[in-house]
Amino acid sequence: MNRLHHIKHTLPKNISDNLSYPTAEFVLLDYNSTDGLGDWVQENMQHYIEAGILKYYRTNDPLYFNRSHSRNMVFQLCEGELICNVDADNYTGHGFAHYINQSFQEDADIFLASTFNEEYLAFKDAYGRFCAWKKDFTAIGGYDEAMNSYGHEDTDLYDRLARLGRKEINMTNKDFLHSISHTDQERTGNEFFRKSLKHFYISYLPGKTRVLFLYHNQRFETGTLVDNYYSIASPCSIEEGDWLTGCWYLNDQTLTLQFDSGTETKLHSDDNFITYKDPVENILLSKVTNKTLLHNTLLSYSIITNSNHIYKNEQKKIITVNHARRFGAGMVQKNFNHTDPITI
Figure 1 (cartoon, one colour):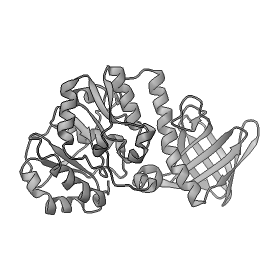
Figure 2 (figure 1 turned 90 degrees about the vertical axis):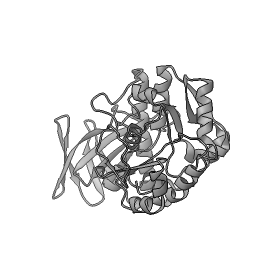
Figure 3 (figure 1 turned 30 degrees about the vertical axis):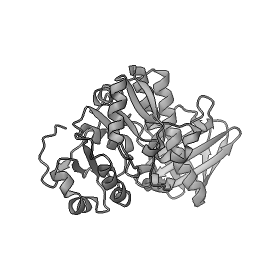
Figure 4 (figure 1 turned 90 degrees about the horizontal axis):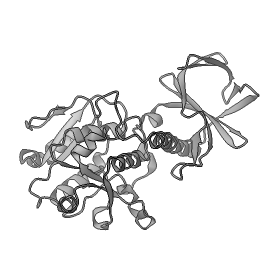
């Protein structure tokens, strides 16, 4: 979503670097971008569309970027037996499609993923690169759409593919791992949490931290963060097991939290503090206005939330996700005279 400034550099280069592979298919999903992506594609990439090399689709539904759903959606649109995620800021490198084919010819029971080895830290923006059989991706339900923000959604995918019986093969050829460097703020700028957070309150307690997030849509999330001992991927876990959610209302100096569980809590509020009545003691939560702390919290929120969900999937040995819905569901439009039939 809104990555035209990357796509205009990476997409033409990636296509040209893989033209020697006769059946390579590039599928570009415009996830309700507002930066003119569709116009640019029509003006600059029409010849690839007419040649059947590039397929462009657009969905007008999402208001925010959801990396798991968007990837599931685009893989539903792919016709090839082998699928590969290439983020908008990634360069595939020359001959990458041939490399994919050769890898799966040598061993069919694998999937390809970027390595997290310290030697490859400079290539961290390529961590989302991933290749698998489409039938395997479909068998596990794709990316877990309960993990809708940044961080470790790909780790969960790899874990579930391994439980399916597939071996992880790391892509170690650095020629295939180049990307356009960018900030974490740009990485998460179109996600719900960053665009919808209205107020953030925090209280530091002995050995733990209480947080409260109030959103513009009158929803809230709250929880107690404790040191995380089960995973090095996230520094904290949620003591309650998951975020407690509900709706909030402010009337004069009374903040009412109506929890989805059915309970209700009334808090005293002023411009900078909230008094939270704990069963044992009153807890004072301070409003956070420091931009650096806000930015760090926005990134940490995503990682903590997703890591907490990974832990649940690991404990239950889950292989297939998204049971309650058809993964990657959504309406797309075909554009620019591309008429190949696609079933969604």
